[in-house]
Image 1 (tube, rainbow, N blue to C red):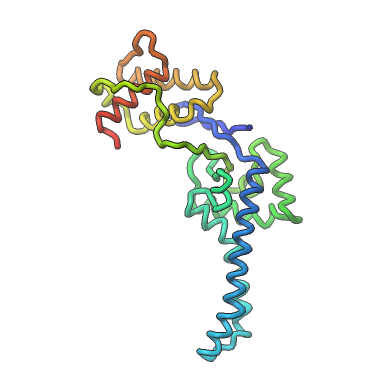
Image 2: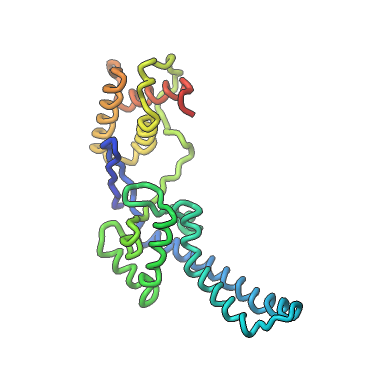
Length: 251
């Protein structure tokens, strides 16, 4: 599986698995089905509710009914994807089911501008039918990006589903009281440590060793702490994170 490599400001490379054409079409199929349901609901409202309302209030549905129908189609076709991607930070119901998410090239969550921008090009990507332009575009680049992704500066990646929010740590014994030198570790650095511990088993062994070395060196430079004899890099980072969390400085 191809991956998106992101260099964080801390000079740590994070790797996210890119979503391929198959998973994206699965998400699109589910979203298209849900759109069809919305169209059906809109048609029901248009056919039954509008004439009833017109009879009660004396409106002429034939004069403004078509405008309502066009508005419903417009909102469902253009608004469905952008609405959910704004609401769920890069996911639609279909994407959530397929376990994929739209993010910025930098790895940050998308905002309303990216969500709207990438979906404005959906009509072009859909030509001449069954997303012909979009599929060809995704096949011609390594990150499987369609035109809308290029315009908005986004990529689609797989989410890693886990049973716990915190990393699965090896240490089972309670840690000693937190070293006061750990007060020099910032919130961002703690997040960095825990992100590595959370994703380490998904990393290539060479990347994993290089990443843990750089993080441990950063901690050592900030705190002066050294690994104990026979202590692995992962165990050292786990101990640092546990002591900080047990100290209650971060919640």
